[in-house]
Image (tube, rainbow, N blue to C red):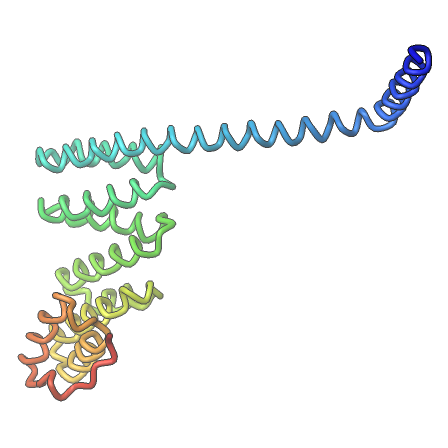
Length: 221
């Protein structure tokens, strides 16, 4: 009986050897690919987490510089952020924050450069839309009305469309084009939600143009 079992075990061992000789190399390569991919995935996630932590730390540096009203430090930190972590949302946030701070400090050209970077480099359409709205405001400030309208031509996320219409109305207003401004303000008012605080501001603008919003048919929900 024992001999029979030994022969049976030996046969199984021979079958395993034969199988491994035929498919062992393929199996080894499959395992290498699987475990290699797993290791690469873990490595990528680790790198992403590390980059995120570093980008967040650099954003904090921009924020601290803003609070300290140290504009040179703001510019240095933003430049580092753009160079090292330009593909992160932190970079877009930092550029928007820096643009606002530099504008308030009277450094319009540097503010414009920061906002333009967001429009051209950010991978987030919402941040790009915010940057375009602020750039249009700078254009209006500089009386570059045609440029402001051109800045607002780009496609934006649907939630930003009422804000773009409102800003376009502002451009027409300063140009003395009341009818065009009215049409844009009406479009913005109708698209904004009834409970949106910003809608009240648009109502004030429409009232100044003699429009009673009660007569408008809102499409907002």
